[in-house]
Image (cartoon, rainbow, N blue to C red; front, side, top):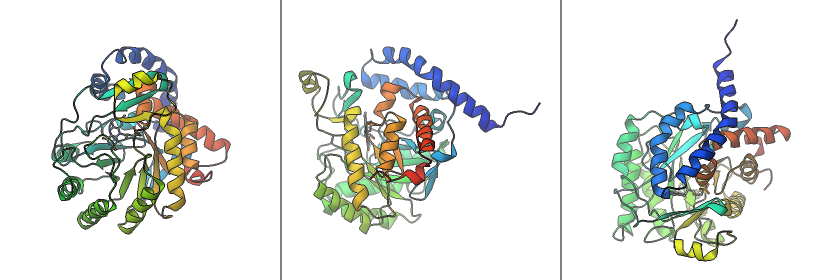
Length: 372
Ligand SMILES: Cc1cc2nc3c(=O)[nH]c(=O)nc-3n(C[C@H](O)[C@H](O)[C@H](O)COP(=O)(O)O)c2cc1C
């Protein structure tokens, strides 16, 4: 008897896992949700390599392959920045079905971030509010780790400015360039410059002059022509977005991650007094979806043709991914959906997205922007 090809076996495993994994996660989730959200995240990072061994493996379908800045991904569902801040999971993320992942944000200096508590669940809304404030081990340490690490999928690194009142102006630019210098020779798919973290002393970037200096500095250091993307905020005014995109075009930026968390609180089911007690921070998850999709559609209209968009914000289903892709995104990313949906979510999104694409006689690449 002939053995089944590896891809067929993996496919069967992925389908079986798609059935039992959400059931298993439901029990684990009730335990995790009794823990402090940040402690639960630390545990999830520790358990991920083990869980990867039990996961069904990635769901494959030709119609899912896509390209961002010329780099090919086997599927368009990526891990958003913030989950694997210190680059501990690059060896195992493909097993959960991700097509690519962003490590970071990394910052020039190591940082403990903002005082705790700083991460809150809004269970009724399938959302979270975070004001972690860019905690991390720092660019040198993460770059060293990524130098020796195995990559199970295309890996990107997201760079932000160290969150310290003294790191602003020229020092802020130097800090970003230091981080870029640390990672520029790694075998990365792309680098994202984060101009949109709301949880820092300065808040989201407002100054084009500062962005210009960072982009010029990166361009001068970028001898290997690593694709550079810019991560923008759903809270930016249309005018600021247009100015940032013009700046990005001037310095050869290859695309945009759209986008980061929002500081707005409209349309939540969680009672207002509870939300207020949680305090400042960026909101992510389901309530962010409409705003993020609007941002994708807006930027799709005025970006350069050869620049690509990665959509991000509240994506939890294949239909969500399809809406972002037809809205103009070449790929999508998620974070908060994993907290509520579990580690098999990328596979479930990919299965459903493949079905949707086929029913419309499309592939990811032919569907991009068809609804915009
Ligand atoms: C706890 C947490 C930490 C985050 N940290 C970062 C970060 O360090 N850098 C960054 O660019 N985005 C960060 N983000 C934003 C996410 O990458 C993403 O843009 C946002 O959460 C919207 O996607 P989602 O609704 O799928 O979570 C973080 C989000 C969360 C929830």
